[in-house]
Image 1 (cartoon, one colour):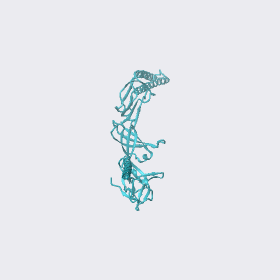
Image 2 (cartoon, rainbow, N blue to C red):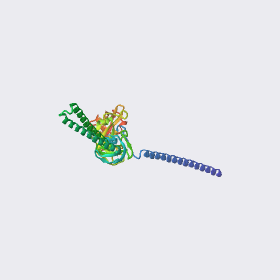
Image 3 (cartoon, rainbow, N blue to C red):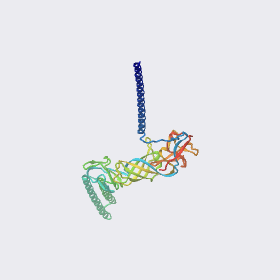
Image 4 (spheres, one colour):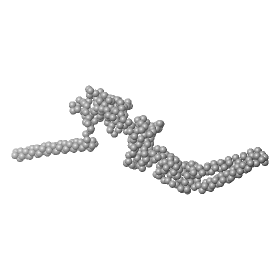
Length: 396
């Protein structure tokens, strides 16, 4: 009997131990699941922080009670805005003077200037060999002497004949013939002198000279080269060294730039900023690019190289208007608009017309007077007629 009882107790103890082991295994499994869930939540939180860059930016926040959305608003007021138009352009000589052969040409004997040299009006740029023309000039001078001798002889014959006509030795017809001979000889003298003058003028044109004072930009001739009227441009000069930038701007911006407006020019590859003044606007618009050319004159500077590019900042006048950040202005098929919050904290759409654009913001040409409370951000999440809780923007 005792033996059986001991066996029962042993069996009971074994059952209790198995029960305790089951509960211990179940608790361990629960703890593992808890740790796994916590690890997943932590990983998701870390991924969210990395994706947002560690910053919490909300276009607008909803009240904890779920009643109204808070939006940032500001009253822009009205400020005087100086318009500025940025463009790119090509540097060029304001008045470029192409210089070529004006005479009969010949072999170039010497070239006296280089690109970058300053020259005066009438200064010789290149000399053409004139050995043949010099002999022609000497021959023409001799022809004048021959003609003058014939004229002197004709005059002497006429003078003697006039003395004899009174005595009746020579008739009036002889006098008329001698007079005509004398007149023809004198005329031949004048012809010879005119031919000499023409020859001398042609010789003078053998020298290639500067038509006006300026800066030599290009040289396309070398000693020994044979040139003529068909040789094209041999030198290019900038009259007075005056330069300009040909700025390309849109047709809308072109109308905003007045003649006489000032600007700043920064040549590409240079840190120097130069001033310029608009002296001409293109009367036509390019049909393909929808742009026009603004010609802005400036004085010579070593940083200016015709043919190069430059950045141009042109003043386009001033205007009094509200100015808003870019985030406040929206657009759709109907045009540009902003959201304003009225006295009952209701969102209303207000169509506006954009004016000058600068680094400080966008001017509103029409649609606002500056006293409205304009939604600065998150306008895309709002709808007209929606109730909101406006929060005034902090002063910058």
